Image (cartoon, rainbow, N blue to C red):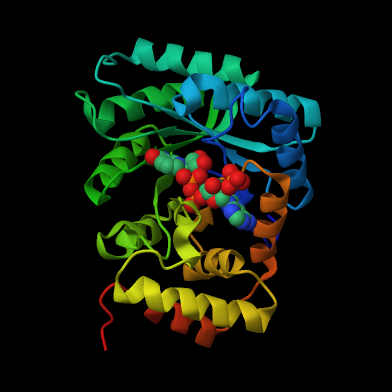
Length: 292
Ligand SMILES: NC(=O)c1ccc[n+]([C@@H]2O[C@H](COP(=O)([O-])OP(=O)(O)OC[C@H]3O[C@@H](n4cnc5c(N)ncnc54)[C@H](OP(=O)(O)O)[C@@H]3O)[C@@H](O)[C@H]2O)c1
């Protein structure tokens, strides 16, 4: 595992600490050629970890990612997600959804497969049991959950453990404008259970550095990020990503990008080591209700 890689829990799979979210990738706009360039840029800068899902652009994100991966030819790590829609209640439906994902991606296996959300008439356990079969058949290398609270994480981990499979990751929203995983127990659970916390919307859709929300924390946050960015000759978004990565070793972030330049800029966060003082200043400034 290189210095900028992090483990997906105890799954044996490791990924770059920063990946690329592809929920706006599709075969229409912004155009396959630019997405191919975006993927190539990510591989070049050590961010070859791509996050997609069957429901992104109705499968077109998976298809566009598959095309870009084949065009590039270099090895990458790919994660996708199963959506437990209300009409989906059987393991056979899970199997065929995974098969369609593999077909759209043009692969025989994917590195990480998540349960996209826990809201399902069948509950988390049923889908984790289906995950174990997918691991055993070699169609997926690691099993994860997304948008799960601590109880749902533990349930998922318990079911997988019966088959000797570790829970690899919980993908949840986490940014300097959305720090709920620190207060709802998810970050602590990831540490205790040795599960990766994959942070989605880590840039708050780009708003993390503008302080656009009218609360004391974010307003102060914009200024503090700018101060650190100026000192470090970096951008505020790079500082925001570096803060997340320093927050915990279990953290992996997947900023969404459809432009090669955005990927290249984000990659600088991998080498941006914030000092403890810089980290603490950002920490304090981003707290919605500061403790002092
Ligand atoms: N599990 C879930 O339920 C869930 C939910 C939401 C998202 N996700 C995943 O998380 C990923 C990230 O979330 P997100 O895309 O919603 O939000 P995000 O990562 O916080 O922000 C993405 C936005 O930031 C822009 N951006 C990226 N790098 C930039 C840079 N260096 N300078 C300026 N702008 C930059 C992107 O622009 P361009 O597109 O123009 O490059 C895009 O508009 C998604 O792609 C998806 O894979 C998962």
